[in-house]
Length: 143
Length: 347
View 1 (cartoon, each protein chain N blue to C red):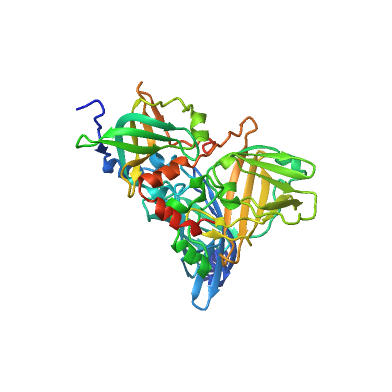
View 2 (view 1 turned 90 degrees about the vertical axis):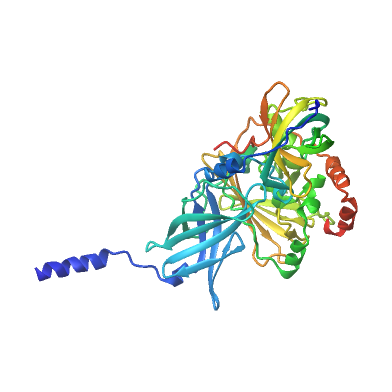
């Protein structure tokens, strides 16, 4: 496998189902709430991808990271991945230079209904092993 | 012995709760669902018609079954991301004039996941315009930074649309038409109720409201000034406010054509909004009831709600928005021409 080889795996759907039935906390803190997330992303199909960051857009309405990923046939594909709006991320310490061009990252998230190379990021694993989440709502958890 | 039995029977008859009459359901009710993490509140209207009972929650239709003192209500909603689901409320109208019951099930329509509500108790009391427990005496009490709390709003999905509005919604494509995707303001109704903090600055003649979402701002004039001539329509409109029975009431007009929510329901330039703000919890909690009046598009006014907590040490962050990545995605997906063809859909 090459350096950019991707580990694409379907998340265990049973886990999703159990998480849902158990009370929804797994999903309930997601908050890409200022547009219809449902129109674009399939929450029944979370995936993990791994690759190298080629571009960083740390801007509203959503941060975007373009990631070079090798598919199962070894072909390189650019994924368009996105997280919460910066004003929400920075409050949790996820800053503009937290993820840089050239970083190798692992992303877990929902992929598009039609475009299978776009992802809404739920969690990202940084090169140093830290895991950040793009699910929290800084001002929505006071009570 | 016989006398004792008769006396016992009479006592039982006199103390037994009377069953409410079906007609007593008719009217307006304030619906409260005690979801532990995020209580919900909404206006429930029940009308008896020639073809049976009809119900509206927050201005939107809700299928209802009423028999004797029993009621079942189905309320469709979206979660915070736009996935659809239904809340089924089952209960009874009690002799004390209060409906009580439980949320028996949630039918998921689009893999929505606002679970954790099953079994929550609910109640509905006759809706009366009662004065706030903590009347606002001076508008300076509103000054400060306010952070949104969870809950309160049902996020009712289906509204009582006019035929023209239904046609508009049928052609709506959220992936392309949502203004906020292009960094365009979504308009007053959506922006005011979003989960971002905002700040209120109080001046002698106006309140200035500064929203983190999309760097939006608005002035609410409180000095009774004459409306300016030729004021242009805008996403936040032209607002005037007044203290009324302990509430801060804001009326807005001159809005631009935009959408109400993720469903793409239109708001016309003729629309007006009424916002009613109340303080509670020793001035540390601010609640809003927002009513959209737009007969061009809605047969009943939709209602949205929001509650904030005072957080004066919070700072409103700048919301610099760049639509570049949205257009790049359209280009990458080969949908640029489709986007251009839909220009008339973007007010």
